[in-house]
Length: 586
Image 1 (cartoon, rainbow, N blue to C red):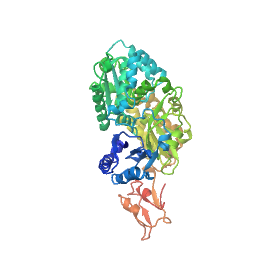
Image 2 (cartoon, one colour):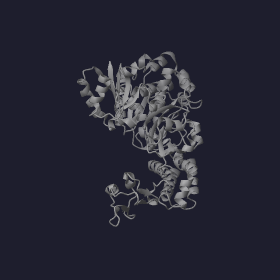
Image 3 (cartoon, rainbow, N blue to C red):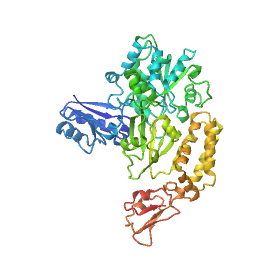
Image 4 (tube, rainbow, N blue to C red):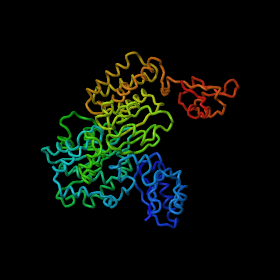
């Protein structure tokens, strides 16, 4: 039967997918051709939302983007009646799009292909087959060994071997063990976990069930970000259906083992992504990290051994149970097996959710899949690993995307946020932005994190404001080393990474701010000024209309305009709207 699928993830809904879904429902009823309509998760092509996939025997599967409610009738007629896919809307036909064809979708293989609210769809696509076979044919110890053999490492940031963590949990004397899924995704520009949960929630639930069986856990929790209402609904639906079908609750699939899952909404603090802070929040206390040891696998929630894995890690567990450890280990590199999901954002043509094998080069990820810069300016760097990650310059884009290679260039894998920066970005300002985020999100428990990051931020703000002093860079490096060495948790230890990486690769930009009192990228407001070239200005007044500060006026009754320096707020609006290149920044 002919079918229509529409992406109903958060990105699609934000772009108007609900109205498109309503238009599809109405138009299909009067089309005269039987077509099934299905709401699915995001396929990852966020830059072309709302997206609709139409399938017919004549054309196969065609994915369309930028679909509007008004354009739905013509789209359906072109595809199903005339058999002529509209070229302006067509993203791919049978897998020929560079953005999707260059990926290796394993964790994301069902996203955009199944109804995330349907357990039947999940089972039909092979879901829960891995859990059934594992419970029937393996022991918990054997499955822990399978995870170790796969080489799976935690996808939440640290890259700790998942099998080793499980083995430590199994060794705990206390048999009341707990499993927690960390879905408190808080990195700026990161939306991997949200996309997986919204598009394939049963995979996360199956992975949790497998992990709990392997470590001998009797209860599980999903600590999910409260700002993800769609993901929360999907998880609630999935848990309810899984419990009703016998995949959760007492005597799971007749195995004699009981396990159930509860949802807890996050407290809204970035630091609660740290394991011990997350546990404190679950216990109803303020989310503040504690010293380790004891580690959570020894003493965690309410003193019981607790294993914490993030969303993508647990989704990979379901893959390993289904496909086997050897198939998983065959992807990626020797020390970084499998695939990695990234949220691709920033100054890049094709933004969205991508999944690539470990070991792909950063250049391929940004250029071949992302499509390069939309502005025409050269790509300058990528910021990878969230606010605790590092900035990698374009000169290092041949680096492989794996845990060890990224550390060698001063960055970390993190959870998978990747922000592309073109030549218009000021790297000093980028470091200031990310440090401001981590400084604000610091719980304040550690002196080095609380005070050290504050002092570092003050120096960066002074440099961006044109008040940098000799010795500031050396002081930044010294403070970074002290904060890294003496902070209690991962937030403080990694907070200086954006500063250290930009100092390593873009030191000349810092020196320009301090020595010449200029911002080479023209981003730091206190260090730039705007002017209008009279030879290029035609007096159209678009810049004056844009200027809310009323800093632009005609000059001496002549046709061209001038910008008054004092009232100018350096917003850059005039530069953006000028069609003639008459506005310059210096």
